[in-house]
Length: 340
Image 1 (cartoon, rainbow, N blue to C red):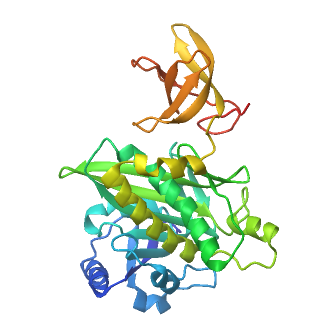
Image 2 (cartoon, rainbow, N blue to C red; image 1 turned 135 degrees about the vertical axis):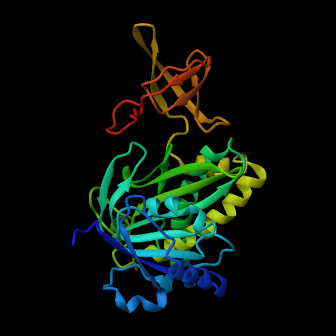
Image 3 (tube, one colour; image 1 turned 120 degrees about the vertical axis):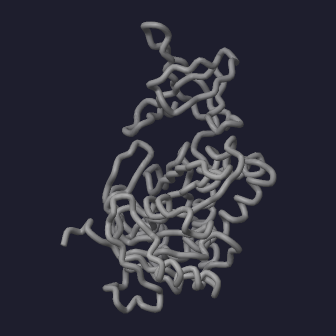
């Protein structure tokens, strides 16, 4: 059978109410995938029917680490899956808000530029659901997620007495460690019944050195005798941090998290080159990043003291005054960066 022809999903809840939801979803068979891939559903009590190994996600360890009120309490796990993001986005209305889908191997992972790739074992790959009412702040949710990931890694290190691992945020949605990419965030949303249904996807390389590095490689370099980080512990810590940050974000706005975010990202006082198309020529300017604007773009100041709002797309012009389409120079993806 072709590997894309079917997939197995294990449903598990933290409480009896969420366990009842798992049973209902299995009995009703309502979960679907957009490409009509056949889904075989199991409850966590039936996992002996699945082939697992020591590297498989440990559902019990994760559930024991969860102490949230909403997020992460309903889990969907698959040993091999096309995309966790597709599972939660395509079944958003059927799942409790805060549901998370995790897989060990993902063979159609998604990014902002619609690239797809295969993610091997050792990566923490998950997607979860969020519901929001204010469309003006939906674009900022990726920053809250990024911050929760970096703080979760710190939290696990602290609790296990491990050396500090300094994961940084590379705007707008990448995670870096020692100058190398170790993760990324993807957020998509739809508007339905006067609410935004946001599907959040996260990939974090915990225990696989390819293609760049991973958390445990850096940890072993710092302290060879250290115990290793586990995906389940990081995911549990993530939801604890995210739930706290999300409540602050909704109640007080992103300003309540801005100071911590700026301590965690790579761009404070960074000098960048911008490109702006003016008629038939491209004009370059050197500006210094100051922070984020209220809409979530980069706020920068030019050598002429003019303030600019920078977007990560150099291919479109903008009708707004001082709205520069930015292309960072000297890196290899959809945006490029230059440090002076």
